[in-house]
Image (tube, rainbow, N blue to C red):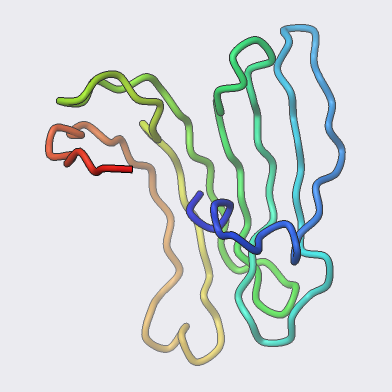
Length: 126
């Protein structure tokens, strides 16, 4: 999700297919405007609560030269931290096949994860 917070994200990506389901959840897809040869990129779908605008889920694919090599899903939840309740990734799945030269060093991967410790957050000014 850090890629989505980059200052120039919307200059290189477009939002599309915004739809609201019967439960009030918005689904918004994003993708690169143009594939960048041999560069890493991201495309995916956000699911956003229609009443609170809180992100519920993000499904993503990492791209290399416009072709997918990894994908995953992050599910968000309200998480207690020493500084209050914050909406953060709580669990997810990841899969990938790095291929190319990187594939010689890193094998295909897949897995699920759960984040259980957000107690070591630090408050920052701003």
